[in-house]
Each structure stands twice: as structure tokens, then as C-alpha cells.
Length: 172
Length: 425
Image (tube, rainbow over all chains, first blue to last red; front, top):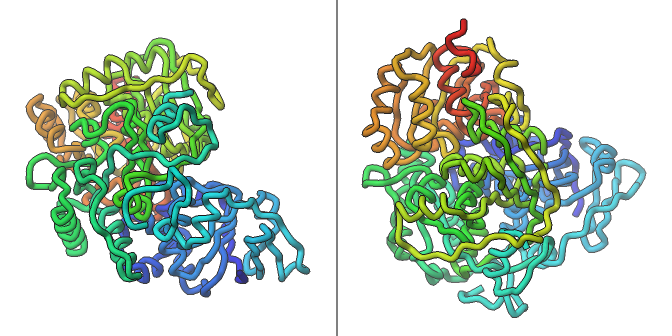
């Protein structure tokens, strides 16, 4: 994956900022994308190109369980978010819905990456390369096993269990 | 094992689980509402476009639905969402559907306990982040998004990483005017808004034993604001009595082992606790109410799953009885049944005589949706649970979070007011 960075360095960027409450009644993904990050930056949707990355401070996505948040960001073009930590439901929604990758990085890495930097992310090697900064590279925290499998499947709804405990009713 | 670990072990047919284990747990109860429900239906629609087929809910009797966020229908889209959800529920046989204008309905988390829809020892998932609330009934209760809810609706199971448990022991004697809201704001102020991320927050101690069920629910409700996966209080006589007053359903409670391991233990002596307010723009940005006195506000809001239960309304009304509000004040009981009880107790009269407007149950202005949304530069003191930028309306509005007593006291002065100081000036 290769893309440009949009950096919002503050910690605790919450779901009310990512997609404000009045839009919760909307379930058209393209419409939601028009309001991504509206509480912080009205110009966000026009700044982002398909495949870009968002770099942010810790506890990204705290607040509500609204799946609208990763939906709005992913349909605006964001394919991965790099942050020192994520709020649990946002993380889970991003992965299980197959919208975008929540990538955990060190705080120092977050500080090192600047707005508009061009990054290359290789999740098979857990490596991030900064093409703007002389190809310096950073580590990302590897995905836990189950998360990696769900990512590979493209979301929980496409995920097939091969474990004994995963044998469940239904047509997944 | 802690109570959270024991519930997850039982739900995954294991003798033992430990923090960090990834398990697939059987789900006992599932909830969705007029915001998450249509999102879940959209997941199924997209899935069917890929050639898969949704053949029905794993167990419709374990599913319940409420209309709470955009009701009474805020606009055309809200009305269509409610209609979509109703048709879907009917098609797939969900009988427990709480509809506005058709008897009991209200905020999902309040219904979960008011109707005893979730029981001790159960695994409960809901399409809303404050699903944590219901953990006060001795259940494992956690919020999920649309896709996760859709998955459970098909399979009846979901994955969890077993959380570490942080234990909060509250002891001492509760001072006058102190409510559970002051306790949980103090705790969030100490651990931070990500201090319990991925973890369980368990509450115990003498104070918890003495707290009525509705106050306990305020504690677990706001564990979400510390990032917790779940909040939990082990079921005891108070829990059993509360449930038996509402249902004769059988259940099997679990409590933690004496040698359970906690990742952290926090001890609070609350004898000297003061009324607490969380300032904009974070539930962790706390201050003593007294240190903020004189801060002018435009509006007082008594509503939501956090602060519009019957006990919340009783204490607010006690403060407002015979007095007049100085600023716009809005009171929205959390469910229709609470509304009726408040009416029978004369609380609604008190609010209206004081000058407040009383509205129907809705999540409404708490999430900036409708019915009392804040405009630019408006400043509100609220019994709700979040005060992020734009949470209750305009991104340049401000919300202070406080207990129903502090909000009631402030409604009478138009300034943030420590209830202990009322009448002194």
C-alpha cells in the first residue's frame, strides 16, 4: 500500500468529530464520506485521495460504536490509520467491517511522520517506509492472529472458521 | 478468575480463560436500535449483493429492538429508518420491539434493566457503545458495531479478547449530594479516557453494596468513557430484588473467585468526595463543581441513559421543588415507564411548575440529533455522558457533564452551582 499522509496529531479524536451525531441516520456510504472528520476539518474529504493514510494521536476513534466512523473515512479514501492506540470498538469495526486497517505505531513514529509524507506500508513485513524522508523505515505492531485472518478475509462476514470452536450455525 | 472471566469461560465452554485469550463466546442477548439496526440491515444487503443469503436470526427470542435515537421521528430519513427496521424485525420474527407511541419504549440501555431484558451471568451485546451500562446487573455487556451485530445475528457467537480487569473498590460513607455520577467522573479523571481501553472495569466495596441498582448503572454506563470493553458489578441481593420485581425468569449468577487476579486495584475513600463536573471537551477533564461556580450557562439538560432514570429524576425534582429555573431546562425521562412513575410521584408537576420543558424519552440532544440541539456558543450543563466537540450540537457549543443534583442546582441559578452552596448567597 502506498499513499499520502493526512496528519491530525491530537490524541482522543472521537467519533463525534469523525462523523457527527446528526449523520447517524444516514446509511449511504458515499454520503457519509462527504462528512468525514467534519468536526475537525471541513475540507478533509476534498484533501483525501483514494488510498491515502491518516496519522493520528493515541486513542483514535474513542466514543460511540457507530460503524459510520470507519465507513466515512474509508469511503473518503483512507485505507489505513496509523496511531499509537485505538479505541476498541473503532478498531473492531474497522477490521470486522473490512473498511480500513488500524495500524498501531510507536508514539515516536507518529511524531516523526509529517503531514503530506508519502508512505509505503507492507503488512506482510510489518514495515512502514517513508518515501519522503529518505526511505527511513518504522515498525508497526503486528496484527494478532485472529485480526490478521479477518483482515486477510476482507472482513468478518467473509471469514471462515477452521477451528473447532468456530464451527457455528449459518452460512459463513 | 474474575466475574468477567468466569462469564466468558462459561459462554465459551471452557474451564478457564485468562486475559489475552481470544475466545468465541455464545451470546445470550442482543440489542439494536434505530441507528444501529438500519446499519446492520445494510450489512446484510451488501452481503446479499455478493451472492450470499441471510436465512434468519439464530434465535429471535434472544433479540430485542428499540426506537430511541431519532424518535419521535426527527425527520423523513428517521421515519424511513424506523419503518425499515420494523419491517425487518417482523420478517425475521423479533417479538420484543419497543416502538414509540405503542406502549413501553425508551432508551435501549435503560430498557435493558427496567424491563430486565438481560440477566446476571449472561453475555449481552448491543449495537451501541453504552451497552456497558447493563454490566451493573452482573452480566458481561459490551457494545459492537453493525458488522459484528450482523455476525452475531447469524451465528449466535462472537469473538472477544478476554479483558484484564481493573478493580475499583469504593468505601467510606457517602456524603450528602454525592451521586454515582460524581464517583465515575472522579474515576475517569484519574484513569483517563483511554485508561481502561480493552479492559474490564469492576466496581466493589461497601459503597457499591449500598448503592441502589439505578445508581450502579451510572457507574457502568460511563466505563465506556474510559475506553473499557465492559463495566461490571457482581450480582447481589440488590440485583436479585431488582430483577424479581420485574420478571420471574431464572438465571445463574456468577461471582469472581477469592483469588481472582486484577491488573490494577484502585481504592477510593469517598467520605470527602465533592460534586464533580467534567468540563468541555472530555469526560476526563474534571473539576470540583465549587471551583467552577460562577461559570455562566445557557441550558440545563436532564436526560439520557446516564441521567434520566427514576432516581435521577427524583433527586433533581427534590432540588427544584417550589423553585423556578433561570435558564432553559429540558427533562426527558429515559423510558415511558419511568415517565409514568415520575408522573405518579408528582415529579413531572415539579419540573413543569419550575418552568422546565418535559419531553418524551429519546437519546435526542445527548448525541446532537434533535430536540434540544445546542447552537454556536451555547453552553449546557447536562446529566449525559459525553462532551466531545459538537457532541450536543454545534462544534462551538460547550457541554459540562454533572450529576442530576448539580444540573438541577445549576438550572436554578444559571451558573454552575455546587448544590451544597445553594441558598447561601
